[in-house]
Image (cartoon, rainbow, N blue to C red; front, side, top):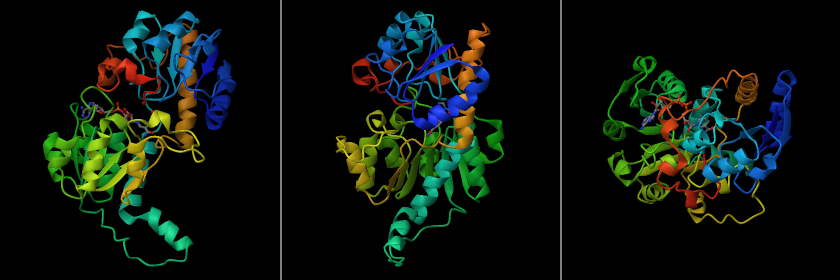
Length: 358
Ligand code: NAI
């Protein structure tokens, strides 16, 4: 099948080329993001392969449909950037990679926790400058601390296991509790998790229910000096509220792998340009904030699995069997009902072709 691959980086090409030795699709690589203006590039292709910050809102899907595209194969787990109702109207199939390596993201959350706690970002620079002072580097033992896990699906479960293994007391909140997590953690109401946790880590999808779940009210309930970790989706957190929380000392440590307006920043080398996003720039001024650019998924194992499952979805669709992992509006997963326009802050005029989502 002819596949237009959007938002392609050299590492995507390398892993897709390797996986395609068996699938033998005709892959055209575009480094631009998929938005309605770039959708005509897909002319002559029956499939598009899209990533987390591509905009698969109604406008884009209508153009893709006119160009003859029949399947959208996401090389990601999250699909909050797809208007599933519009895709269904266009009779367009949507597929994703539901699980590629929950370990990659869970371990990245741990990396953020350890980096913030032991201030490795400061220690690294100090030692390179010949400054061996320990002032300002004081950390705390993770063993014995209470960790709140919001969302105990594939990633949250691995994360809960890691933290339990470090000797932490793990609390969890999920509207659909996971029996495997019962053995490692106690499910509690969200309010109780906020009150008791030294560390709060987000592993839920972006849905209307989770949009800005971390807001001023949530922060007011948390312990003073709490560590907040977000490797899920940027819009699960109200960034203005967390800036207020940082300024007041309510948040003692902040680790982000995702950001509300990341589509204008992440995955690009902007080191020679001025960052125009003042909110993001403000976050960078705090000494107790570590931000990574949506790299939680970025391991060899995960990229291999993403490439293989993405191409398998297309292969199965082409063979008339339907993709292995189709996303439908009726899917039990709550994100399935979450067309971009259903989310506050994701209304079409704000989407600008840059909704975040692996
Ligand atoms: P999953 O679908 O296995 O688990 C999500 C869990 O969240 C489910 O158990 C679900 O019941 C729960 N949930 C739904 N609504 C909730 C709510 N209101 N409050 C609390 N929990 C709720 O998904 P998986 O694979 O564990 O991924 C979780 C999220 O991590 C993805 O949706 C995506 O946003 C993010 N992600 C980030 C990556 C990164 O590179 N930083 C890579 C992959 C995923």
